Image (cartoon, rainbow, N blue to C red):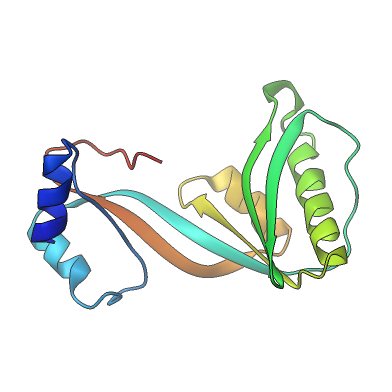
Length: 148
């Protein structure tokens, strides 16, 4: 932790650590707590086994889908404000999952901030379930952003 803090300080930035499951790495969370680090953002990684899905017929939204082996990573779902709450994000996500499954993906994952209840409801309705959680920890006195 001392070395990381020094490197960040030399760069004029607060030290930020991303820590996952409790005890991984062993003792890091407790060390950061003792140093006064704040939790800046908690992010859930959700996973889903894929099945066939519906298609989307609009281009007022965007979603990234990156296949790797038998996984597809979904990220950056954005829906134009005027098209929100109409199922566009759901349809686009289903279409991306269907295309990924057709391409050989058997599982999908995405990351969502734990406080984004609307997105969590959407992904839960699509079958995603918690698989992992991590949090960014920011050095005291340096604000709460993660820089992501």
